[in-house]
Structures are given as structure tokens and as C-alpha cells.
Length: 93
Image (tube, rainbow, N blue to C red; front, top):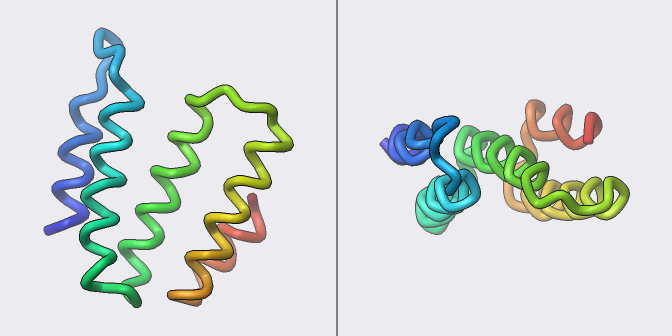
């Protein structure tokens, strides 16, 4: 249910829609609320991280700074939920 709601917010992104960052922030907000009550749900964390990394690309930060920021959030996620798919994603960041 939570994941579907997050992707509903992402479905509002279109070429004509200039609020991509807002839509991604809304999706992340939904997943953050879901994670408050489901701290060990790997599927929620995987989707959160996927959206987070894509959102980071929109911010146009320095590539080195961006990679470090993504690794930092992934390390925090791995402290709460250490699953194989999350470790693989962390190793590929």
C-alpha cells in the first residue's frame, strides 16, 4: 500500500511537469512515514533508496559530493535493515 502510494506521487512526473523534485519529495515522505512503523522492511528501504538516488541526480551537486551523500544514506539504511539487495546497491554506489 505504501509503495503504491509513493509511486502514485511519482506518476505525476511528466515532461510538462517542472515539479519533479516536489513529486520525488512527496514519494520519499510517504516512504518515510511507512518506515516509521516498519523499520525492518527491506522492500520499503529498497524503494526509498532508489527514489533517493534518482532525486539526488536532479540536485546537480558535485559528483563526488553526490556519491558520498548517497553512500551515507545507504549506510544509515543498512544499520536498520541489512538485506542482500541493499548491500548490492550500496556496493554499486
